Image (cartoon, rainbow, N blue to C red; front, side, top):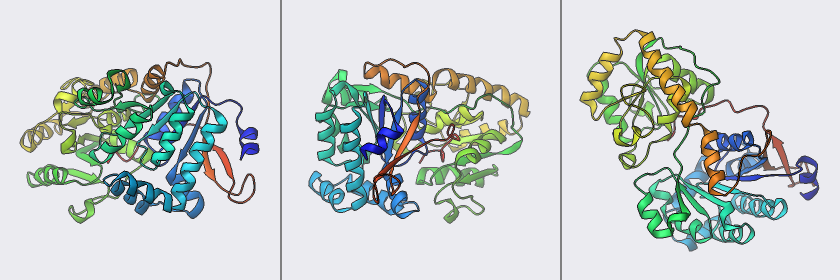
Length: 392
């Protein structure tokens, strides 16, 4: 492993540890750190799984989510028994020991054991440990574990700040909103006279979509679970297809989870403007911190208000909608890019942007280096394609 690392990487500025894979939030943050002049090493448990077995380990993700609700002892037992998770934890510790990174940035962190988290706290100065909490109730227990090991806690939740700071200290908790991956340039592509929603099906989302359909509003939905409830629903949409869908629809809907209302702006708040789309979203008090309702996007409070809004917007000329979309795009590019969020993480760690552009390498187990079961690094070719599935 050491020989392989020496061949591939000279000096590294950041180790990015993710709970899943480079696709989505983790990958965009990795690319942003590289844009700021740092070399980035990424290791994710789904990538480890794919290298060993192929395919997507959905059931393993389910185990990890369920065990977030159990005791620390049970959590350690689950990680200790599964070979993929044991390997993942070993890789993380060995990388930090050998590379001595200037920053360890953990996203969600559900696959790291308590002992691994503690070991990272011993190896890295406290100021250079950062943990991003996705503010899902399932991850609540992890915040205390990471904070106890010396990690700075980063949260997208406005309403959580007071409580988290009272628990872990004002200087240990910081706001880090979600972000957009803006297209290189804005182009007006709106041409499909319907509303679109992309994301997983939850009860509140299903009620709203059914309410719109009953009122005769044309709505297309895509994402996990929708085909059971909505005839003609589409499967999951990723990457460039997701971005293209945001650009061509008259209106892209955003429906927050109930726990997000009044607490945080979800990823879709930023993704849609970054893609050049026109957004209609709930959660007005929080969203208005980032975009101007009525000028850069539209907001609603219930299905009746949304129905009236959509009937009005579906009658607009596409060029009028493009003006709104371009305002939001410019705001997202100026204030809410992943680059700006990565810069904030560096500030929390007391670091400054480097010179030039770094690179991103992904650590995966394979027989390419050091014999069977060794470890190798594969660089990302070019930039990421942009976009996620529209968030969960």
